[in-house]
Length: 280
Image 1 (cartoon, rainbow, N blue to C red):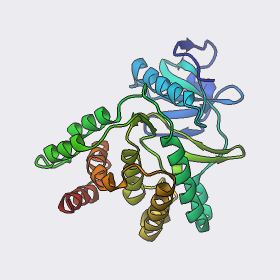
Image 2 (image 1 turned 90 degrees about the vertical axis):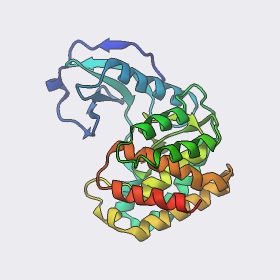
Image 3 (image 1 turned 120 degrees about the horizontal axis):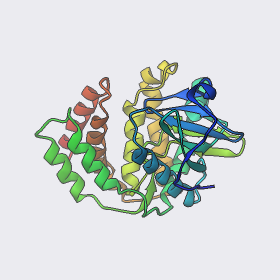
């Protein structure tokens, strides 16, 4: 079910009726709803238009035929906007890796296969990847002023495409379920070039902070190095998208990451960006 984009005021539930959230994030809380569904309830400062935008993106991803959570509709509860998503019961690949680190190689291979399959699906009606990258680079406050025009010039030289791109593809956004793997959290999905999406994944594996309770992954640089290598080797077995351009794509992707203001990453990202330019 891909659902409609109408806002439905469900008369009975209040915030108190929803009970304890199943999960909390930086933008929303997730609550159990009716059987088979969950409510992603956005924090109060999120507007109706921004929530409807995510619902529209989720619907378009669903329409590509890729296995992703189905969407029902937009609702309001307690004056806050939310989206009803299919409830997916599973365990993230990062959680599995935490419990069973010996599964590192098969998990990286699975990520490569899923990503390559995703990139084989056109999604021209999704937002444009290039436009989003430009906005993020222009708003990235930590980016050195002398680097910004160089980053934008590099992006200008890189090719376009209309492939389905996730925008935040990493082990914690892939659930292992009894029906197979399911990719979640599509709010950054775009149509664009696959190598930009690959570059983002490589960057997240290299520098991304792991959730609470996964300290070992944050500290284990060898684990990150192996995962990057296995993932990229196997992705290239499935697809060849002008792999020579991957290093160039890392430049705008790294700069765009700075817009997210994750303070502990910023010095590493800036140093990495300098090294990428030096290697050109």
